[in-house]
Length: 248
Image (tube, rainbow, N blue to C red; front, side, top):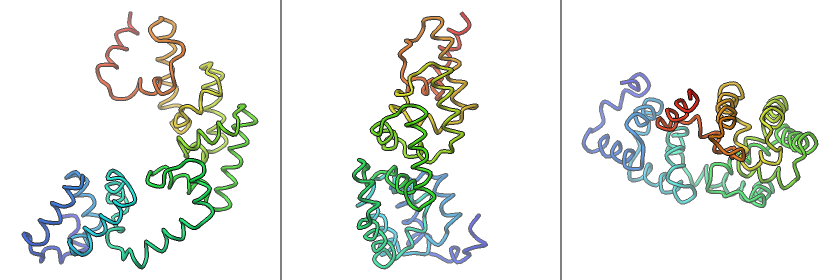
């Protein structure tokens, strides 16, 4: 067992009364067996905490604020949250955030506090360096690519990551999409997540397929960026279909 060196007392726990109920609970909230093994290997202390007094209340506390999917994400990535004294540590921090001007600013941009994009947006604006990057990228999109303020906010709301990219990454990706592929710069804010993808490993290969299909008249020239991106995602039948069409 991967967690024995760090928490050998787990071996002394009552399997039926302690371990089994906790494992069943974590499985019941949506944690796969593989993820459960990883979580417990990383944080075996979860098995030594009371299911009734600590684990379940922690789950309910988080579930009241975020979706089931995001609670599972917290469990997989930040399982220490299930060991915290929420009344002393977590709640005060949440209240402080709620009262801060930054949270209000992000809310006014249209972000939902219950979605993970809200946290990403906070990170993008929190601190002098982050704010400076956000302002710089705001100007890049406006001056270099003709976006309006509404375009920038719309893109930020859909994909906050697009506002924390490097200038080089933005310019290279926009140049390819606009100047090489011929899409309007104003089209990019409709699917800004594409700016965050690898140009060499994802965008160029998928766009190359699109170019060939367009020449053959197999796809509409007004294809959306989302449709372009979907062409490389694991849909085996669709991929085989395109491979056959490219050979004709």
